[in-house]
Length: 114
Image (cartoon, rainbow, N blue to C red; front, side):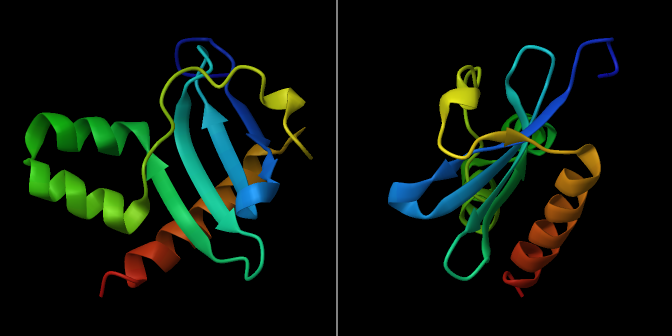
């Protein structure tokens, strides 16, 4: 459950055309709170972004800072993620599985900026 009593959901669909696994943590309204994208052919993370970080940058930084963040960590999905269950190979995942992927992706993408 989320902090306000709503349900947090963790799930993943696969986008075959792009060979990407997308992993989401959604809030109680179905919006992406955190997102990880893993390229299928080499299992390399290409996105690891989160709503709180994006909102903080929007409210407290400038456009070049936001641009740097998006180049490093990717762009967060916008809008409710309804219908994910109908995507190819879609499945709910555990919070633990998401946390492991999140940590590894943030470390990898953070290190790539050095």
